[in-house]
Image (cartoon, rainbow, N blue to C red; front, side, top):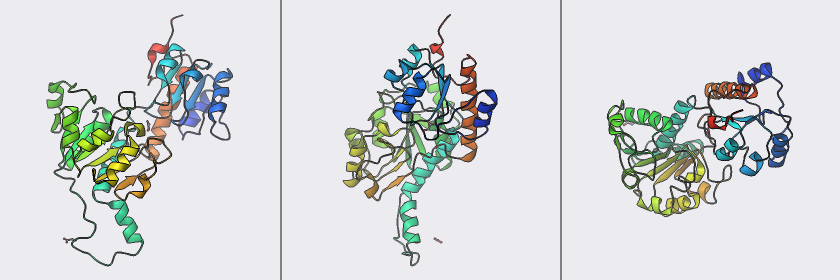
Length: 326
Ligand code: GLV
Ligand code: GLV
């Protein structure tokens, strides 16, 4: 079952390999549960909006789930594993596109691009003025990377070309976990710092950690209070890493200069007040949204699904330990 049509070549590969069912409408939680327990499907090709909690996975009759995303916080992985349900994801192919969106949000927020676009469109531009819509510098600013995986590193690579000073914390809120030889070997200058130092010294704080119990509300009232009042928060990872109500308060009270968000705590719902503050740029979860990237994701997603249906471990597997002996 494919809960929402994925682009080609993914969908055509699936159709060549086996029989594919796409419901007329994306399934509700109840319909997903019925489908997963019916024994009719070997694999579900799932979207981030399809939730697979333990109570569903404990009764599901599935060989696996092929998630059309790199993230997999919509699936309870320990529950999938104990039920022998393999989970595939789509790493790598969306790294650059997501790093581009992190840069886009930094630039757009710092230079007030969305506000300025609205200003121009509405006919208010009456000529160049020394004090018109002044923003903040990106070059020379300090970029703090929350997490230092694939997407953070691709963002660092771009930020280095913008002459930003790069600091990072690999597994916040834990301290320095990356080998210093590895830091020295990076193709751009970057400094590994402890979590409090990252929060206090960043002009731009950009989030690149997966959502987990240890990263939920990592950016809370205390973190926001410790940031520079001139700082800009950027989130291209997962919404619940930020306490969005606390973020709205901080933006309103001038505790923080701005925020560029691609993901939301209660996605797709916005926390009340968020859309009313002028110093935010809000994108509808577009990190991987280019035609080429979505096609490559679909290809990986299909490869994972086909492997699972054949009884093999998928090429990009989150929980290979789900394979049970015998
Ligand atoms: C998108 O958010 C993804 O995890 O691929
Ligand atoms: C701006 O357009 C300038 O020429 O400085």
